[in-house]
Image (cartoon, rainbow, N blue to C red; front, side, top):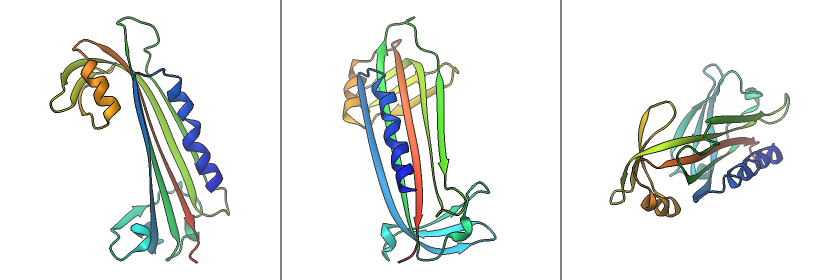
Amino acid sequence: MHRRTALLLPLTLPLLAACQTSASFSETVTMVAIVETVDRTAREVLLRGQAGAQTGALVTVRAGAGVRNFDQIRSGDRVTVQYFQAVAAQIVRAGSPGGAPSAEIAAMRAAPGERPAGAVGDLVRVRVTITSVDTTTNTVGFVGPNGQPRLVYVRRAPMQELLRSLRVGDQVDIAFEEALAVSVEPAR
């Protein structure tokens, strides 16, 4: 499953590159944990973070009915979780074409008999109208096509640079991507 998992994350990057962004960022966070216990009836797995170190936080994860091969998970198995996030934004002229919202979802899961693994990712594109900009607190308010107001704290330097160029009433095309991949390796 490592091969398939590795493919999901980079395949979506060209979609963001096609946005011709004014600002963007991406990051991948990897967490390695060890399975402490498995409750087969409740379909819950207790994981110890930091690759199983005693100081690693304990996290309970519930596996839904769609998770294949759950019965193969054992105490001591190594679990690798990768989380990928990317945001791209471009200021556009009011009324310019191409602002239709869209969403794409991709998912994979282990074949019957393989070690438990899976990946899911989504890419959302939307045009928003800026309603507030505060460069002191690095926040931006906007409303999307659904009319729902949002206030977002901007943490990344490239996006903060874009924030300084925004004015109330500007329209911005945003592409937001997330992906999560999980694989389970047998205890060694």
